[in-house]
Image (tube, rainbow, N blue to C red; front, top):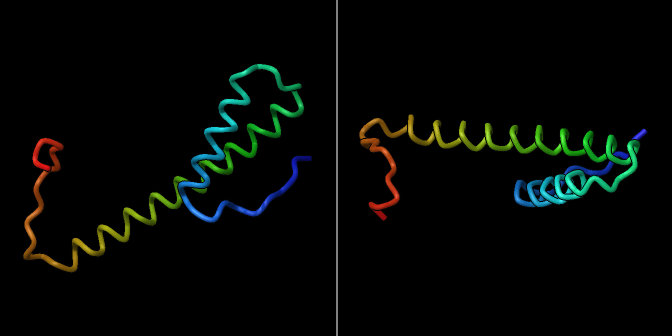
Length: 80
């Protein structure tokens, strides 16, 4: 049974942990049981990250919907 750890404090921390897990899995040097535990933890981190992204998207949408006068334009990096 994999060890349960507290969820990361923020999105960036979760992403960094997920990147480390991917690196360890891609190395191919983990025993099967360890690889499965790492994979399970990675799936949990990915789900937490997806949830945080959805929450951020909802917050942005609420902010945009509250100001109907503000025109929306497509983002283009050249316009910076």
